[in-house]
Length: 347
Image (tube, rainbow, N blue to C red; front, side):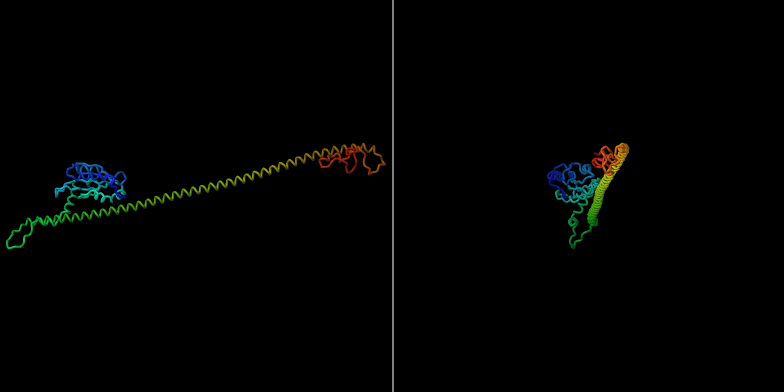
């Protein structure tokens, strides 16, 4: 995400201009982000140089500082921009803010030297001044320096004495500046290489983080699917148990109903047997009573019957037959004449 320089632009430029101005006592200003946003704001200003500035740098944050120093080569003021990336700052935050440095440089016009620092040792006055000296040496015009030396006079007839010390001094200066230029090139190459390595490291960490996040998401998905599958299995098991319980209940109800019906049939059969026995006992008792009564009436009837009566003549009334003693109503017939005789009871 891009840096937000519009919200506090006025206060940032005012603090920077106070540092640049020779009429203001401030010689440093510190800028930082608002919370976890990309909005830049003024953190503080001061008048006591790098020593005071180092105390306000936070090792867990990304910050930017401008400080005014004196160039020993030119005795002029130089504005140094310190790109502070604390050791404790999150790696992701470092990668996000790495692209903000150019925007800060475009806003703060007049920066002479940029110093990248992570520890307090890298913002000590000696280290910062060494960076200023290197930048001053690399910006020096070698063609102009060579022209300021002793100019070679045109060849003439007049003899001019050679000054060895001047020639040695000129060669030493040229050699010194050439060494400074080579050292500056090496420094830039090392800085470029360090930036590339840092970007590679950030890219590698990003890929590893993406892999870990993908593995974590996959693990969460597997766990969620496992929970869903376990829930479905539990529901299916509960449904099967419910169906089995219902089936057992129906079977048990049917068995109980069948047992009740069998018990009712058995009790009915027992009751029928009992009633049958009672009826047989009752009928048997009446049969014996009727036989006795019949024999008694037969004895009395024979004394009054005439000997000449035809054998097929119906008996007179008063004669009791054996069948009439049996209650005809129980066999579905009304009492009346029997098949053997005419008795007084049947009428």
